[in-house]
Amino acid sequence: MAKDEKKLMNIFEIIFKGSWIYVKNFMTFFNTMLFPLFGQLLGILMILVPSFIFSQNMPRLLYQYPYLNNIFLVFSCLLLLTLPGFFIFTKAFWEYLVRMISLNTIASDLIKSGKAGDIQVHNQKVSARTRQYIILLAILALIWVVGLLLPYIVVPLNIDYLYKQIFFWGGEALMIIFLTILSVYLSLTYQVFAFETISPQATLKRSIELVEGNFFRTVILAVIIFALTSAIIPSFIQSAFANTSLFETVMRPCELYTSTLISDPYMFVSFFHIEKYMDMQGGSVIFELSKILLFAIIGFITTGLLLPFGSACYTLLYQDIQNRKGKSSAK
Image (cartoon, rainbow, N blue to C red; front, side, top):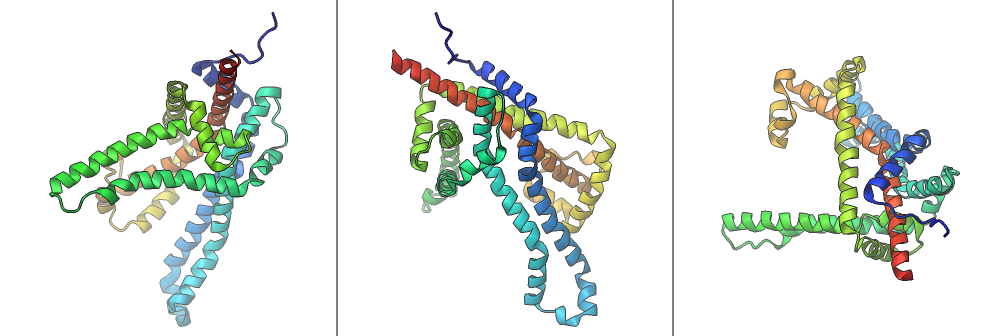
């Protein structure tokens, strides 16, 4: 009896194999994510630093060059200073969105042959369908925006405040539950777009069809991947970084910028309700706010570098569901 090449896998086998693919090809994935991740940070830095320096020196410049006391001229100077950073950020952000698709075809090649092939070829496959991809992203964004704003739109205006609050928060909770369930059904959207040349609307429908009958398997995988890539591993990296000598060096510019940006840190903390994230006994308010900012950047980098791991796991899930449905139809 011939060995079945299409071996079915459970969720933990998928995670183990996806982890092995990620670790074994870490440098390939790292190089793939290098510009999309650090390009965004560089772009933001090139926007914030020149605007910060310009605003700090604005009183002196106005004193020395009175003709600069013109709102249009000041705005034009600020625009010219920040335009390069905005361009780099936009390009890097788009490349990040492209990688969300191309990482799946890279993972597929690694699964089949152990070789990633030419990364640019994978990216070009997505770029060739830019219009369809933008439409797909717009539909996904619209679903969430409409879903989250719906309770604000449909809440009756002629009812008592208490009932209005109950209606609103109850509707918001229901919409979040609905959107979460819908997101599970749409969790294979990027894989379908990567491997099947169909319209954006058909891509969403195809993802729902694939997850149907595999809902709880998909939920388990999604929870594990989210916990690993968005909570456990980033928290570990943040804690490890906080215990290095580099932490204090990086914190100094963060504190300088935060102290300049926020005139009343206590009001800022109260307004955004971030007291629970702060250890006020560990230092000043500015220090704690800067720490939150720095940890957010570290979390962003870590999560971005772990994106290929999630893509590998979802690609394996996509292939496994395809195999299962193929076996079912063959019976």
